[in-house]
Amino acid sequence: MKIKRSKGEKVFDIFNFIFMTIVGLLMLYTFWNQICISLSKPELAIKGGLFLIPKGFSLSAYKAVLKFKEIWIGYRNTLFITVVGTTLAVFTTSLFAYPLSRRYLPGKKFFNIFIVVTMLFSGGIIPTYLVVRGMGLLDSLWSLILPTMIGGFNVIIMRNFFSNIPDSLEESAKIDGASDFTIFMRIILPLSKPVLATITLWVAVRIWNEYFHGLVYLNDRNKYTLQLVLRDIVTTSDPQDIMDADDLTAIPETLKAASIMVVTIPILIVYPFIQKYFVKGVMVGSVKG
Image 1: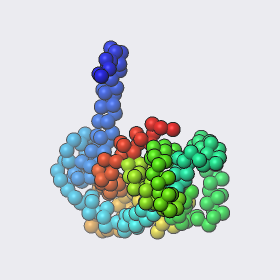
Image 2 (image 1 turned 135 degrees about the vertical axis):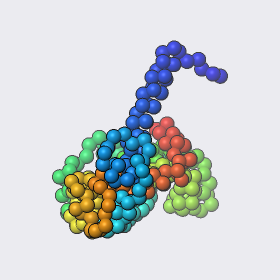
Image 3 (image 1 turned 45 degrees about the vertical axis):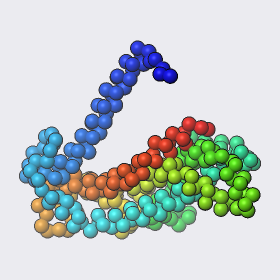
Image 4 (image 1 turned 90 degrees about the vertical axis):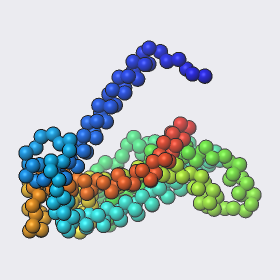
């Protein structure tokens, strides 16, 4: 049965569509502008103005950026924390969320309140720094993985998704002699691909874009992530000052734009592969609870 929409709802939809379209175009243009600058000839890019298409075509900025040794150090470190951090975060979050989705868990209400409290209040920068230092994680890539491994919001989304899985599956497996861990690994996780993919994407993007914690905890440049390397390039008045290549022909504007693209594009490539799970994972995990 089709629900008739009121005049006010139709007007709201129209304004909502227009507003979201404008916001989307502004965000898209910002990204597209950087692509065009990075692909423009340096002598034309320095003139500035609107860039709807590249002015001329040159890959000199990308060649210069890819010659920069610290970009590859940043890639190595960022790939490590993204792959290891995401794997650990998704696994530990699912281990935490699954018992909370079962009705028979003693103290379930207490743990749920405990999770919500962690979402509303945090320890603050200084206490967190002292904890990281006390654990001997300063100047270590693990300082970017362990302190933020489990997030309360992700636990709630995953708990709600698990709670939609019928208890009868678990009961049948127990009758066949399966342990709780076997049920979790061989029944629950295979049925939870949408929410696992969704949480994986959220965590991977967050870790890939990790900047603030790296700025606080890391001093050794060999431990720098891509975002810290990008910070050095973008905030330096002349990026060519920090690049060793003698044959640079690109200007700072094209070098900065190319650096942003080199840092951003890899994580964008991941999204299409798990997009089909994304909406289902968010909706099923958010509605119930």
